Image 1 (cartoon, rainbow, N blue to C red):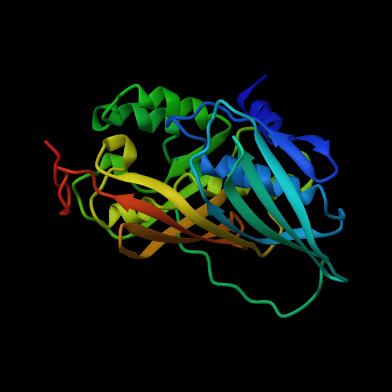
Image 2: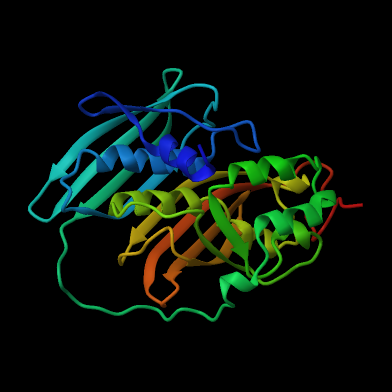
Length: 300
C-alpha cells in the first residue's frame, strides 16, 4: 500500500451504528494525533450522513484535548438540520470516554448567485520549488532531534507540499513578513467524489497555517524547540470546486499574536486562479522557559 492509499484508508471510517463511526490514527512526528486528521475524519463522518447532492461549504471546529494515536477515535454525528437548501451536522470525536474534538459542518445544494473573488497573489510555478525530501534534510541541524526529518517525511508522504520561500525552521532567528505560501497536491490521482477532495484539503490545511505567526517572530517552531504549540480552533469555507490532486496555492498570513495565542488566516487558490477555500485558525504559541521573548532568543 503506497502513502496515498494509506491516507485514503485512514479516512475510510468504519460505520458502527447509523450515525456513529470509528477511525484509526497514523504515526506522527509528535506524540499526539495530528489535528488535520481528526478534522478530516470528522468531516467524512458528517458527509456520510448527508445527501450526495449537497456539498460541504463550511466547517467550524475546536480542538479540545490531545488525541492518543494508539487508540481508535469514535465520531458521533448529530443531524442538527435538514432544510430545503442546507444541511447541518455536528460531530463529536471521543477517545477514552472524553471528547477531544468538536466540529459543525454545513452542506448546500448548488445555487447560482452573486460572484466575485479576491485575486490570486503572484507565486512561482510549483515544479520550480524544492520537494520536502529535498528541503528537510538540508536543515536537519536546525531541529532539536534531527531524526524528526524522517518522521516528517513519512507522515507527509501522501502530500507533495512545496514552500515558495524558506519555511520557519530554515530561518529561525530572522524576523520576516508574517506571510507564507506553499503549493500542495496529493501524490497520486483521486476519485471524483467531491467530499473526498474537501476532506483531503482539510487534512492538509492544519500542516502549515501557523507558519506565518512563527515568521513574524523569528521562531522555528516546535521541532526547533523554540515554541510549544497546538491548534485551538479551525474554520474553513469552501467557495468553488477544486481537486486536491491538482496544485493548490495556500497563501497564509497572520494578523495577530497575543496572550500565548497566534492567529493564522489563508486563502487557497487553484492553479487557474480560482479562490477555492478560505481558512482561519488560532493556536497556542508558547515560548518555552529559557527561550526568551525576542527574535531568535535562546538559540546558540
